[in-house]
Length: 383
Image (cartoon, rainbow, N blue to C red; front, side, top):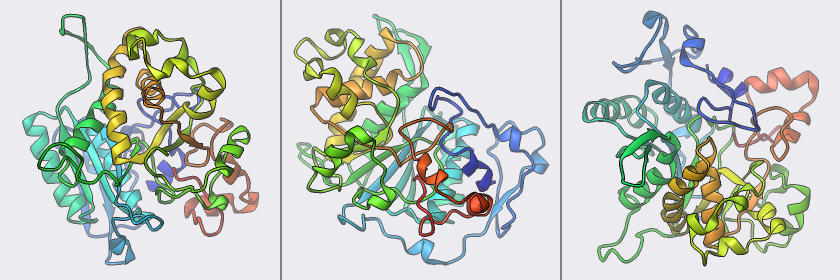
């Protein structure tokens, strides 16, 4: 099962990667059973739609190995890491989340790994909380958490009435809610400052399957691919570790289309985003998940991003609206990102991704290596 998802890693059931929409439903893999069967039987939630429930039995054994001794901090900076992903409360994303946690355990991802689940009703919330405790937090590691938020995906008109739904609003609004309310983050007693502003936030998507850990350190050139026109920017940095004012993200083919939107309406007449030139916009802002920043920077982004996303969607009511809103928010805050090509692969042939690593694997070893990717043998993308 995990191998199947590795082979389609970074494709999305609800989005587009590299201009191609790819979908894999649990129904299409119905009946596949993990060969490493062990003690834990994971049953679908009560509301799951399963064509043949008897055939869907996913089992996995998690022995007491070094997997359980991975810490909560970055090996490079000692900052606490939080890798997070946003979901709704559907059965589909329930199983996506399970696979995300499974793979995070397998690759020994350091830090806290948290599913942000938005829009669950009371009954769903209780079931998801209990299932998470029984099958993930208590069986895998206590570092794997779940955080619930209200429903954020409603599209509202000028009078505040809901007229539609755009589920990707859950990402900026869920991020903001998480940073304000997650018990390991939040604000100090005075409410004036964050309790842990130096923590590192790694915002990913639920359809990502980790092939190796993601951290705040991009100093190892063996495993870091930089696009040619950004190489001078990377080489000119004194440090390749995420710090305040120095966020990193995966390169996406978004270009600078966001500069064509009505930025006065989205960000205000005096927004610094309006001063970003074409070249600068193409170098620093066509970003997508994984987004990596300090908690302080990510909270500033989340505040502005959640404000801008509905306004962008009003002008551009299509997929990627929230991603363009992130670009505008980063430019508005004067937070140029260091773009990394090697954090992700999606559709074969797409530029700005880690396909060089795949191509460099000797042809005669591709199948055997794909069944058990080993970053120490050949570098692999993060997802």
